[in-house]
Length: 270
Image 1 (tube, rainbow, N blue to C red):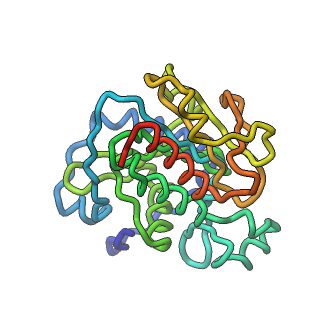
Image 2 (cartoon, helix red, strand yellow):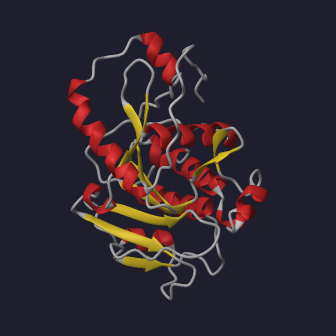
């Protein structure tokens, strides 16, 4: 995503591993230094990112939806000479050498799920309030509702690598933070008047999603917690209700499409 650059005569700083404690420390440093930072020039902006386009939506004071993707496989490691986002397709040998299961490294699941959210009519109508992604390493990412997500998997991996290393992704020109690492827990960013709903095929509460959302008060925000991993289930204490919306196991993207379709019917978004 970013053009490599260097200054002759200066040694490169050693890369660090981004464990949960180090992320927290870096976030505190960023917050402390933010008021003292000067605005960068346009050349510096282009060098740093090149810009993520912003999609303008009609944001109004209406009840909306927040998606939380849990256990997303977004892990950075040094492979060869550089750092990469680990993937079972590209780094199976490296992962096996680390005595880990390659099936656990599926960033493509998070990519498909995020695209399903932002491609929905729900998002285009301005009813999407935020998207949060919690990684397997317990790092929390906030994505603003008006970001245009890269369509290709390769560009998405480059974007996530940039985010996990630099903690923020900004828009070209405006310097608005479109994606950023934030502190846990995720509950501090959720509206008070909201219902938090999780999904699991093993749940005994099998429902038709459209019938379920019609029972939710019109002035209440909805928070949907969806697993972004290849196997396992979401089990978070803040979830108020666990649902099963199909008798068959569904991918995260398919589950999100079903949720969005039900809400689009409820709110008459065409």
